[in-house]
Image 1 (cartoon, helix red, strand yellow):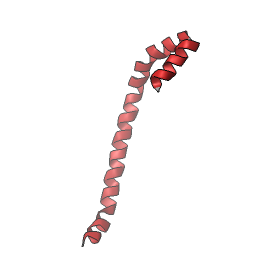
Image 2 (cartoon, one colour; image 1 turned 90 degrees about the vertical axis):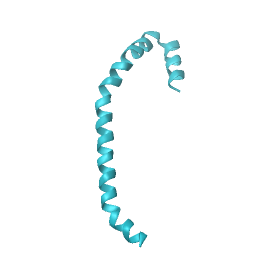
Image 3 (cartoon, helix red, strand yellow; image 1 turned 135 degrees about the vertical axis):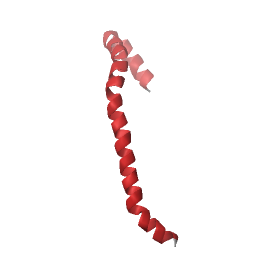
Image 4 (cartoon, one colour; image 1 turned 30 degrees about the horizontal axis):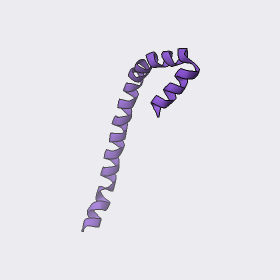
Length: 62
């Protein structure tokens, strides 16, 4: 899908497509820390959810 959108952009406005092609790795590098923080926060929420639901799972197993 991304390739198809890039090819359409290349046909209609090739300078913008070349700028997007050059800028993509830099944008990816800039968003990498935010994705890492997102993974860490998601892990913390999953841990809290597991701790809070542990008594219910123990009682359900009995």
